[in-house]
Length: 248
Image (cartoon, rainbow, N blue to C red; front, side):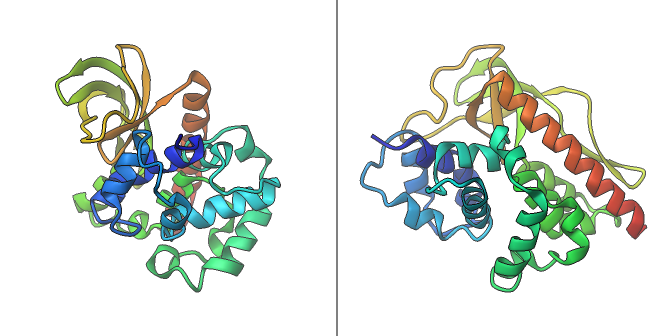
């Protein structure tokens, strides 16, 4: 049986990987693992080739005293947030991130300098808003930076209807207004659930909460998961907007 932590990693890593944004060319393998198949797949070997997510999960595990970076609680701490996220010392995390990865993980980390430590948290939303370069490219008004930021961040969404090959969901997207990143009021959109290997989420019904990553409903969220994700997103937006204001 596929370990829960392996399946969790595959669920969130699949969509950007399938688009060629990060990790090795393992989209089909990740898709199988995300659906609970692929028992013969060496998931740790695949995960180590993700220069974005893997360093975070290694550091979370180390600082939390967990042996396995692919432990389910460690993965949840990084991707959506949980109680473990708050137990990781943010200052220690930021210092180790600089020490170990700033000079060796290429374009993922080129903006990671001591000036960014005030924003550092062991979360995916920090990686998207803080480490990625896209928040530095918003000012000219080009649509691409905002589209990438909104696609890459993980959004909670409420299922409105189950449709053929997808879901109608209610969720909040990012806007860039008056030099600030803000969340728009909830609105409906269609997201994908299609998979040749089965289902990432299992059966869904109106009212269920899902995580959306690059337009794909990749995980079912509990009420607690949604609360953690929303809180961490609000926090990171506030820190990012403070930086944007300082930079003019």
